[in-house]
Image (cartoon, rainbow, N blue to C red; front, side):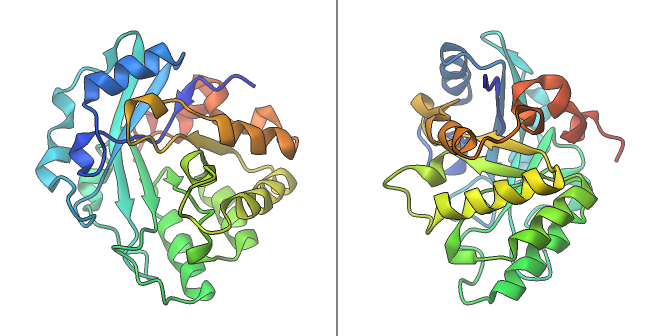
Length: 241
């Protein structure tokens, strides 16, 4: 399947990525993308930008090098109550919002039940569009609950290319995403693809994501990044929030 959108990438603003907005846009164009979302880490991630960065995103052009640009944030899920690290009023104004569990911001000692609760509470927030890298076995969750809640709330689950790299640090990512994808097939829940690029050469790199989608014969109609019209309803910029 042809993937024309990347809904998860970072620039130098995130603190541990290595390219500018224009460099990422150029790489996306060269890699054949039509849409690139730059989703900087929210402020609780060590070294990332402050809230004022996200408040000023409206000044940036939404097309570069022939690529439609989306600007938003990868929020940090802070606890099992589903607290996030940017205010709701601001999140509603972003083009796209991902929420993810990251070890610097979330206690790895939380139980599977607590992790599941965290995801469920976050998906209830209408301005959260995507759950980022739910495959991370360090934060195991009940995947059936996760998938069913995604369907109920209209939240996309992410197939994260970075998670699937052979030298990736997320535990059991391939096994876990395959479980999630099988459940998404069963319940007809759409997914998105994110490179999670932290450098320009990875913008639109879906080598590993594409392999798992093919391996489990995942239906193309449930992959929203194959067609902008399928992706649009899940973006804040096109929602009535």
